[in-house]
Length: 180
Ligand SMILES: CC(C)(COP(=O)(O)OP(=O)(O)OC[C@H]1O[C@@H](n2cnc3c(N)ncnc32)[C@H](O)[C@@H]1OP(=O)(O)O)[C@@H](O)C(=O)NCCC(=O)NCCS
Image (cartoon, rainbow, N blue to C red; front, side, top):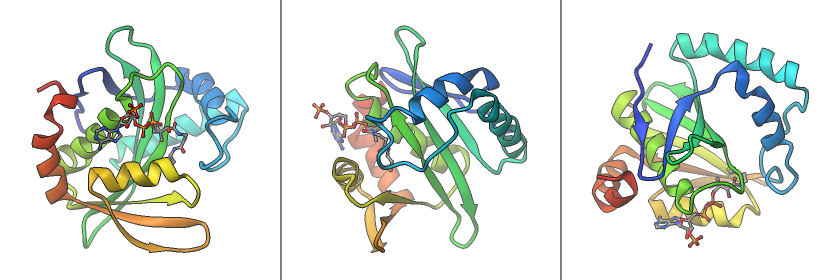
């Protein structure tokens, strides 16, 4: 089992537990936040079962689901997940990225930087791949600004790659968000 110590200036990541089920249901079923994410259950017991099943994947190093928490109060403010681990090239997907209204101003930047820290530094991937639904304009801009490359699209999504080299560059350029 990998050890993660993922802390930035105003937020940190910790692995999900069964007791996060209610928060996750509320977050993913919040109509102001779920336009561009896949539908998931609003049933807390079903969500708990999903987390228990996920925990086996975590043990097998197949997937990691993190809660995003504030440093100042420990309040949980969102989620993010690393999954779909591939070989040749060694690449990870990330998503389930949601922050609620109690987020810190730069929680988005910090959580993305911590995802790359986990994927590249701890899990030793060479690149990241992910998709963003068409219409989620702010999120497309976010990824392009951070250095992702759009590689393809279909009617539903744009598909991006984020290379390890960009992560290395960002560690310096974005060091103030990481509190270093
Ligand atoms: C996706 C999500 C987590 C992003 O969080 P966010 O707070 O909206 O992110 P923002 O783009 O507003 O970034 C936060 C701040 O960092 C700034 N920022 C973003 N990228 C930056 C960069 N590369 N460098 C410096 N600052 C940056 C933004 O300008 C913003 O500051 P501002 O409020 O002064 O404009 C959030 O919008 C969300 O939960 N959306 C709903 C679910 C969703 O669509 N998830 C994505 C599915 S692909």
